Image 1 (cartoon, rainbow, N blue to C red):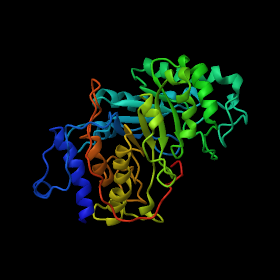
Image 2 (cartoon, rainbow, N blue to C red):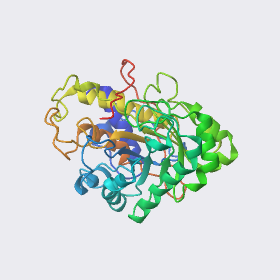
Image 3 (cartoon, helix red, strand yellow):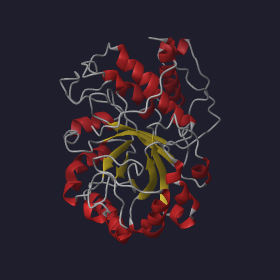
Length: 378
């Protein structure tokens, strides 16, 4: 194992040791590489997580066993404390992931559910379509608020609290699958005028493709819209390259925790390489530590409060999906899951308003090319 990799694991282990949860292995204890000052608090940690399947074709709902592996705190479990799911534009599909979410809530510890819509119903939009962007018609703002509230209330009746509800996934990305176009001003207007309609949850604004603050600044600058908002969210696609993987002073000024709610990178698989189920494959481990785990750490350095990976169950993710082309076993924990659990399992959500703590020193890493990340919905 390269020294940079040892340092990554050492940092995560040191965080766990501070909480009194995990004793560092002898090798790492004998060669400490970081200093942790337990007297200094930096930010409140809301959690670390991943998404259920979102699109048709991306897999069946998590089974009870898979959900327990992802959120559980036992041996061989990953301790995710945030589960992201989709608000379908079709209400008859709302129940698809209800069982997985209910299991996550009942089996996990302090698990929060984030629900993100990719689009409003087609007839609410200017292009009368679920896909290719299109704007929410202003005369349907109240209907869309009712749609979001309807989802939250439906899940409440299923025994699932939706802790955070996003107004829109990636308002600045308009692909040929479910999507919807907003400006920051339009998001502010919706949240200001309709936000109070969405009850029993806290709204999130932003979820920009690259955490572009232009999509959340107008909401934060308006007192009414700001009071209707609980969180600011965004994604990591090109965020480092554009300078947006960084502190967000305006959100901090108004006490709005910032969540990184999606990133997906699996460049190591090449062209259908059967490597993800092989624990000895260096390419997977290098990408996991040098790219994924590095951005987790950098997000914490930016004082963000949550990091949510893309699918929790996929050949390149935390547990395998059984795709024979990529060599994983369905439901089996993968090395990426093992690495991520050093944060998700041992840096737990704050309770009672007491902030979690993080390491003082940044982790070293090798030089690497800048990657935007995979944009496929699968």
